[in-house]
Image 1 (cartoon, helix red, strand yellow):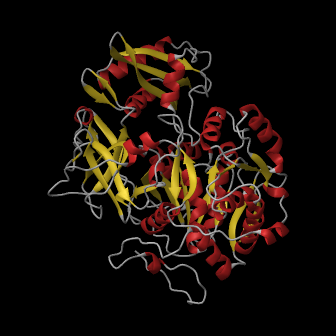
Image 2 (cartoon, helix red, strand yellow):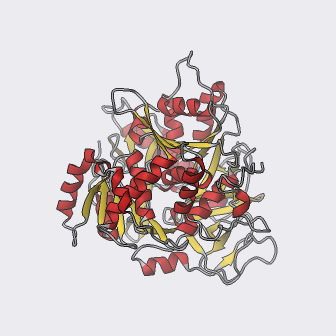
Image 3 (cartoon, helix red, strand yellow):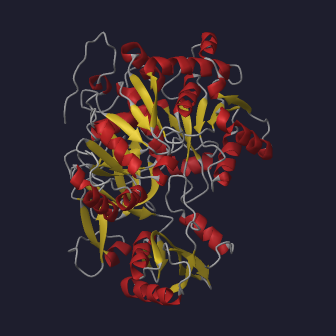
Length: 610
């Protein structure tokens, strides 16, 4: 790992040496929070760009709007002063605004006031009104921050909710800088809650994860060290929404080391994935650039984001985090094949594992490593054992390594029923302990106790992965299944998604991949497999979206092909295969398949065949 260059002490930028103890573990300097780090950046590099937004909605395609550290500080004081008129420390402040610089200033202003920021989204986001409703009722914000462009739709949405008391609406871009003269500094403790991160709702209704200043700063340092981002000329580029934990992390990096991040909107990416590639290439000419996205984004860009043959694209200086659970090797291979002609190094893509309850980041592969895959025996995996076999062996299932666990974090594989650590090669629940673990769920003491207060009764005497964990400390139950092989962490799936037929476990993503390969009528990546009760036993149901151009084709041959293929590969009878139009299968706000919501819609009769 590179060592950080020590700047002139008078500059005042944070040094990585300040954040490590004598054993190399992460420890925050006394009194440091995200806000104090921003203040250091303002004092040291105030004229440097902190954030840049690429605007694809206006007449000038990709026009860059910039905010320096000094300008950021001015906006935080101005917005913060108006917030102090309406809220006190500890009150929740929700951000319901489009992607952009106003969102960033609103979020950090709420944190600077000692209030609890609640990063959400404007009601105009299609298909997610219920999630927004749940989050607002749960967090009960005193103030809602928005922008003039969406004020009307936000106020209409709040009127329909009839919250008691009704939150004040504050329009970020109508607050003059001069308002900052009235800002009163607020003391912030490192263990205060910085923000509530509402979960995506993949497997249950959204809940607010209480992220402390200690947790978010520790996690950002873990990411910087794991990805080797110690060069201050490294910067971020992201289209991920700012209400998503990875999107927030991309605006957190600059606060730690005085760099900058460039943002674009999720809509701009979806409409033209090549914009992401163009922006990465432009940014990489000025220094190393880090970006992040889930599986679908790499697949979409490989299919629809290729530059013109004569385009001047250079991706040699790019690091790309792929953080879906589980990570798809097919997505990585497709992207590498598409963009290696443009200089993309084989080490660029970094399969990673993260979870909101640990702020985000848990594990990734080494900076000089390439993405790798182990082929595991399907039948053994269903019985809880990870047994490597040749790639061409019958029943071989590909699983991508998520590499090594972050510094100062412990991750163990546990038989959750008895609280016993399992040896390498055994599949169990992933448990975590470290300062990046958050403070529980907002207003959910029982859920918090179950998830955040687990105790490891029996660690392994030899080969334990407890690492720096406190012997009697509480562990976070992630709800994810995984294993260790050759010192690397593999995530095999979610506990709640695991289906059991005839006494053997089956992972939905494995069956979904089989379905996608069984017929060209299936839209790849848009298949949901889940179990439903019938006469005292569970039965397998498949819901699949139709591929583009297949809207009028008779689905009967495809249904028979899917039934036959699933029976042959998995030994499971399919109770029903239902084809639905494109867009019918619900997805989370981060783009993940929402199997739970799909299952509920199916049981409620809301998924009509097509």
